[in-house]
Length: 266
Image (cartoon, rainbow, N blue to C red; front, side):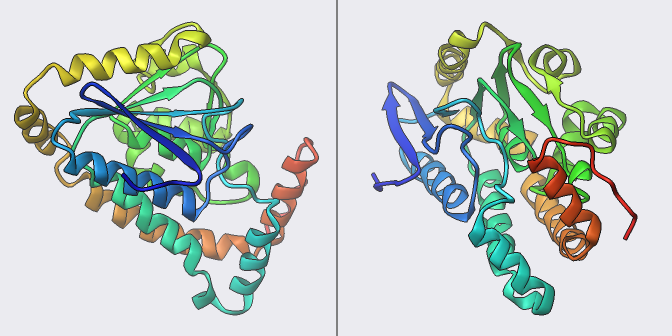
């Protein structure tokens, strides 16, 4: 099995486990998403693995993109003058679509915050086990930004169009209990039981016929990866446009300073 730098990978019985190892907040970047996609493809090739669990170390499940990261800021500065230079973000979405093309069921163990693209990552799984302390948010509009990671397609399909609009338009943080009630999570258990419960669900799935699972999942998720690809293509156009605005700069700054942003609409 491939050696990874940002994730841990193990197998227990017929279940593969991927653990994000960038604590405390597990911010994602192209490398992390690429490694998760690589691990899932290895699971697809392993006939012994029938389901997988996506978990994380630290305080958060995945707190999204680190907009304060100097490397990201440099890339965004280049994108303002040369749109073609924005390949890393585009490449991140390419990797995201690879995750949606995997063949076997995934259970996400969301023990903490799943924010922005981190929510997109959690929603890429078939099921989510969470806890009252977890927080789910698509905080893009509070940043002066547009949703990404395919969320404009995946979230409405999961919680309904109006609930997705509410999450997008308010940028509010949804608790684990609220997520469970609206169908964003499939189980809500005490925080220290989240991973064990996710593994238990994956093991229940893994008791079924591997060929039957792959066949049924392919039917249930038919066209999903292509819909996500179309969504990310559009999302990227909007993100590139909004990234150049004063409001985006103010939104990122206000979020970092933990204050209400003073948006100007320009």
